[in-house]
Image (cartoon, rainbow, N blue to C red; front, side):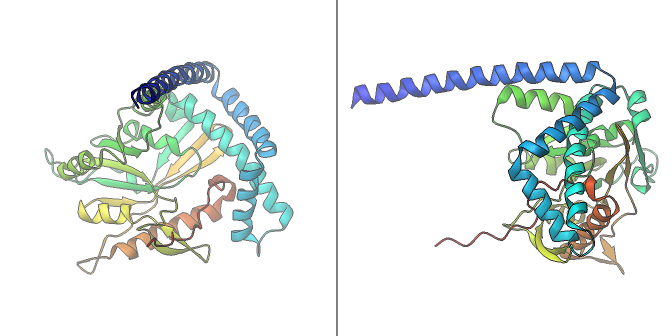
Length: 319
């Protein structure tokens, strides 16, 4: 038994060392790619991203079929099959453009970023608290629209708030630190969703936080069933629950593409969390959030992230 245990331990150590080496290699290659994209003009980076999206559209059959199926689900009575395929094709190009654009923008100064990214709407108005008082927090419930990574730069557009967002860490530690560094250059604090929930709650308790949550993924377990394009899907209750619990102003900002390597974030009007002096239910608020997202998808269908499955079924209970 001892030789077997020793061999297993040796295999585990070798695997751990290999994982570290792979992490370092991936980090080096990624850092090199980031450096190249940030060194070139934004227009070049955007065009490279669109070309990459073009290639992926033809090579990645699984996600191409997913995008076409999702678009057909939503627009089969409004668009021809040819138009739906064209929307999926453009969607892949946009995803590539937004990815490379986001990487390039992560290295921009505040002044340069303002030239390519506009932010407008009531959600970025100054707080109306008395001088010296901590403002109530604001919550941005957004989705995978346009260059959604641009929300980590909100600190450049709204003063008086501590900007925060959540993320899901990746397994490779060096890569995780690299991407985290890109997202925090403008001062936004990132909270890992699975391990730093308590720290996030404490920050919201203090007030004065602008928190961005990406909330258009299917959450199946614990999610609320809502209609999205007339068909049932599951939506996260987190934005509604957190806005009510921590007395946040709630907005559904959307990032739209307005040109090659150019975007605008529109916050829209606040989603009310109270009506007639009473707190609205989380389910009502969640439905309003998803209705606002559906409106945004209809405004520019190619702008959303069609390659994920928004309409999953709830997992069957295990016995």
